[in-house]
Amino acid sequence: MEFAGFLGNSDLKQRLSASFSAGKMAHCYLICGPAGSGKRTLARILAAAMECGERNAPCGCCSDCRKTLDGCHPDVITIDEPEKKTVSVELIRQLQADAYVRPNEGPRKIYVIPRAQDMTDSAQNALLKLMEEPPAYVVFLLLTDNAEKLLPTVRSRCAELRLEPVGEREALPWLQRQFPQKDAQSVRAAWSRAGGFLGQAKDLLQGELQLPQTTQFAQAYAAGDRYGLTLLLCSMEKLPRDKLLEVLSQWKQLVADALLVRAGLPGGPEATALGQHRTAPALAVAANLIQQAMEHCTANLGAGHICGWLAVNL
Ligand SMILES: [Zn+2]
Image (cartoon, rainbow, N blue to C red):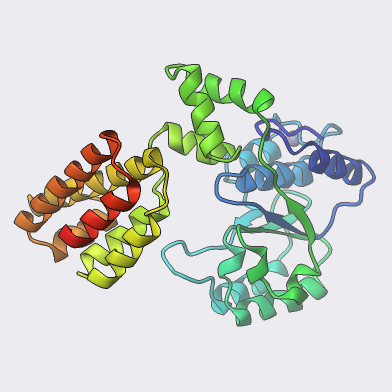
């Protein structure tokens, strides 16, 4: 079995290859791993392997493979409503009804649930019923960053595939090929900060990964929640200075974006919320304070002092 584009995880690949050649694929896989660990990539490869009719499946060339890898195979169906917080029982009931309709093109019908941990309990129970007696052609691929949130009854029905970080020997050349303009040191730093998870490393290199402290700041600051902001800053007092600088630079960017929103330009959802709840002068003061805090960081002041100073002034 070929795993093009899915690095590391050699034990897991061996296990999958062996069960695939023995014709013993499971009907339900639970693919677990943190953000950026390759859950979707592996799901696409598995789905292609199961739809591909060639001997060396997934061949990557036939129309079933191409459609699956491009995300447009009619029998590989993603179950999600990304705009909603949970995956509802209604959505699973639609899946239930659809599962009894035979596949259109391929030999199997594959349901991918990318946020399995967000299924409500009733959604999970509805899915469980189907998992107990699925039509022979149905396969479920459940993806999650928190398998603990699934009911034990659901987990026990799944073959669990746990994704591991990718070691530097394999990861660094691959990342360098993706980002030829970055120097080796930045690539290595991103790989290390991402804990070896390549999706996260790519996001870091693209400067897109929002840190959890930034999400919390956006919420607390938009809501005028001083207590929440103080708690957040207290939790940051032990951060190494370079990490604190990284957090603050995201905050500064967010506040700058919110100022642009106030000026009538479009922005992301968090910048828009900030722009709606805070006046332009207040945002300008905040931007200035964060800038000063960043300068304190580079002037070697301790993170505890800087966070305390921000908690008082912000
Ligand atoms: Zn193929």
